[in-house]
Length: 120
Image 1 (cartoon, rainbow, N blue to C red):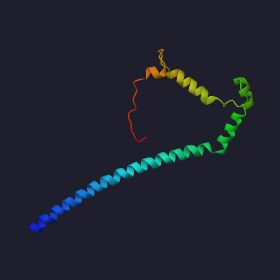
Image 2: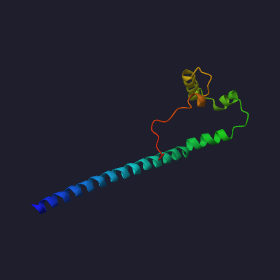
Image 3: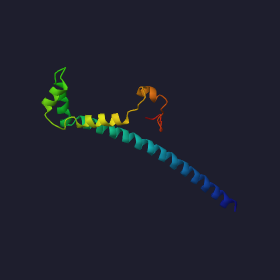
Image 4: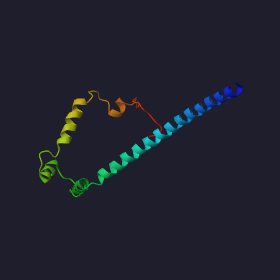
């Protein structure tokens, strides 16, 4: 009987070690997965900047002369949809604008992110 209880105690200790090891393995895997996601996001961001359409557009903007007026820019581009996202942004910001005289950094000085992590 003494051998049987000793064997049961050893089985419990072994199962506890396996559970703790499994939890540690899961934590390590979650951290590695999070790091891989960050790296993939950075790669995708870099990849979006390396596309030929972006590069062509960037080169076009760099070659515009300084002091170009908005009207002159519209006549180079010659597209009715060229600035539609700027218009959408303007309308959205005006709709969401706070009527107070405080600047954004003053109005939201006490703001804290909901998920603050030291690993970011």
